Image (cartoon, rainbow, N blue to C red; front, side, top):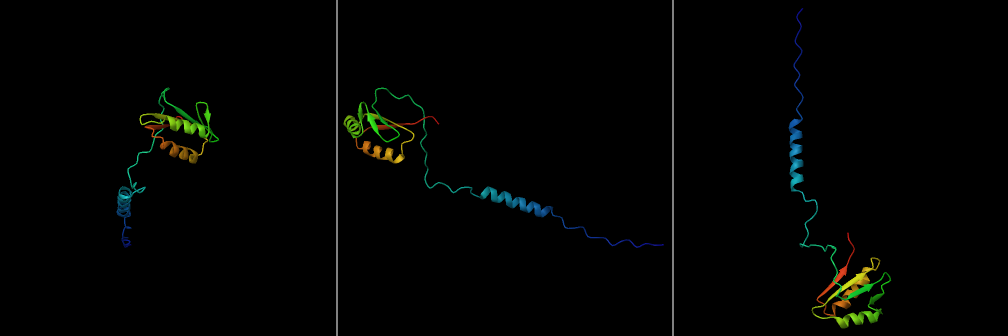
Length: 127
């Protein structure tokens, strides 16, 4: 009895080349894609740092309610006294409570900027 050989089946197409192409495309898109758009300007944000505060420099205080103080003076009298001490080479230290709204500080800084201080230092806490 002679048996016929079964017909040869063609092997299925290999999927390995397709996987290679997909990985190459994936690598290409990962390398060329931008995760975030670039910044329009180079900006270095401020960093809070601990420094020794000079004892001889005038210190202006603002509490959580927005009340300002300078030596024994409070409110508008304190602002007027600080502006009277302003000079081209003088430095002012501003200690504000963390609960003070930023709008109060911004308004106060704009008023103090008219005093011709060489530097106004805002004291911050440690990060």
